[in-house]
Length: 404
Image (cartoon, rainbow, N blue to C red; front, side, top):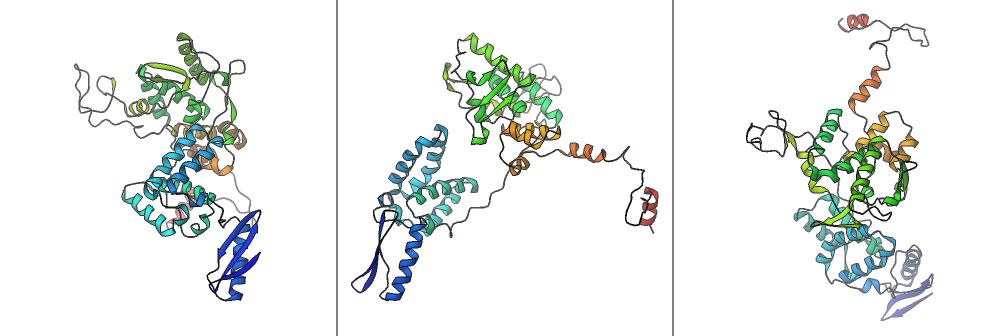
């Protein structure tokens, strides 16, 4: 560790954990140089200072982003890699070949402003800044931004729990159209197991235990998501339907996926299905004609030639239902069933009480039944004991006092 002068300006040269740091202190005062040197050593010890030998920080942003993602591949799932690159794309397009250690706070603020002008949602921008943060941490530059850049406000969408009638209607409509088979079976599994969409798509036949009637979740959003879920009768019937279909086309190998990839009619059981988004959207928007009862997409008149009833005022109660809301609904039903928190978290794969509170939104009717259960016939007649051994006044007395 040493202090030395160049053209009357003090510089420092020191090493921390095997890394050498050579920095200009931008001062001609020796005492000020000593203080700055101590501050830099503290920053280097905390990983907040880039060494002169840090070649990553000298790369152009696009090249740095590609290298950073490439180095992270061994520890990420394929889907996570694709997602992270999608978040890096607009950043790479904006910063292009600007050297990483030349990017300033004002440049990042300009990026945020431009993304908002392009119509990007606050949550999207926050996710993009999240991958920017990871890249800058590797370059030992994020400490320059963390006190200046705050996440944009985000409205957190609360999960939706279906009413009994909505659930019954959705299940009835789903069985009408054969092209909705995958969406219907996936819906049944989600409603009866709390599985996420990504967990359902990643299921292989080796994960199904027919003797114990369980499913093992090996790939999930989090480590806590890896779990074993017992299957009730509805879920087992859905699995059986998939197994019959797989056997009929010779795709029942243990390594084959339950939901197989299918492109232009070509089935590949070694790859998982990417999405059932179109089927799910059509399923949740579908309505029943009040005149003839036929299931169809919203329109001005019924599609049946013999009917042609006016249906432009008929709307589906589940038109904006997300597939992930099925998980919310399943956890809500578990909460209403008086299952313990530990049991619910074990089935759903949660790791904390806060996450359980986020997902389980007990419905108003269930709360009403719970409140009504506090009394007999909606009213308690027995007295209550207080410090002065007073009796609970009758309802009529309360009303008489309130009108005085």
